[in-house]
Length: 114
Ligand code: SF4
Ligand code: SF4
Image 1: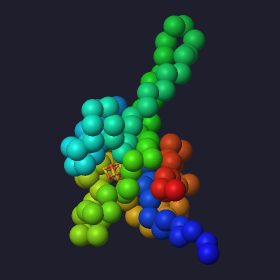
Image 2 (image 1 turned 90 degrees about the horizontal axis):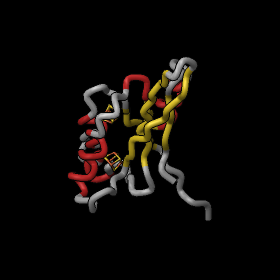
Image 3 (image 1 turned 120 degrees about the vertical axis):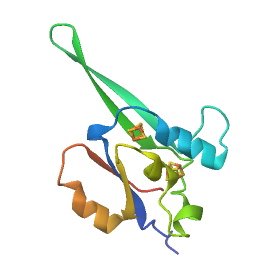
Image 4 (image 1 turned 60 degrees about the vertical axis):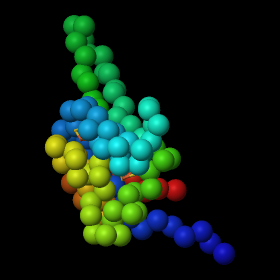
């Protein structure tokens, strides 16, 4: 018997991610994760440029703890990380719909739980 594939995911558009970590905190509070654990982590990527300059990019990325807020989405609510991101970096939805939006911008990641 084949394993059921997830049909929903998160489209992460990190162009305007400020690295504020609100998504991590919101997840951690919603699920009472122990300190340092959350369903999403914000990774800082430092790109060194000429003349001692650097370009910082923040990449919010779900961890193996993320269960896509099943309890909330069953009630028609947004995942709590999506709801709390002031920069609207994340969108929850059906993967086919999210995949259609993927090619529209450069800095996007489509995440589906395993
Ligand atoms: S995804 Fe949103 S909430 Fe999370 S660090 Fe980036 S801007 Fe902040
Ligand atoms: S979707 Fe829910 S469980 Fe997953 S990272 Fe966001 S808040 Fe946490």
